[in-house]
Amino acid sequence: MLLLICLFLIISEAVYEALYDEGKKTISGLIEFFYKAVVTVMALLWLSGQYNLHLPVIPFWKVLLGFLFLRFALFDAVYNLMRRLPLFYVGSSKVYDKLWGWFFRLTKFPKEHFLAMLKFIFLLIGISYVV
Image (cartoon, rainbow, N blue to C red):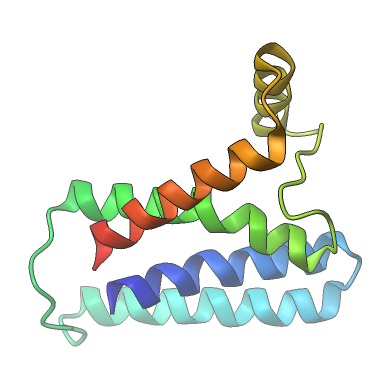
């Protein structure tokens, strides 16, 4: 269940951001509204004690790292696919993209192969932490 929640949070955010950047603001707004409504309702139900999944206890650090690893592995891939960009496209505007660009210029590693393997490893670790 925790894996499904993580996937919902990561994929729906990537989809609505990509659609927004593509100029499809109406559908993006609808998906963003649905995303935020679900998150808000889940948080309020949990805070009021009405939402208890009876999940096995997983240490918080594992859940946090698992979510971050899954986000690293999946967010850019979903975003790039929705924008019809290459799967491992690295932009040039955000700090994250500039750091990757600097790293690949410095090391001369092939960007696609390195990111594919790194993100696959992070995906496996992320899944194992939240399951």
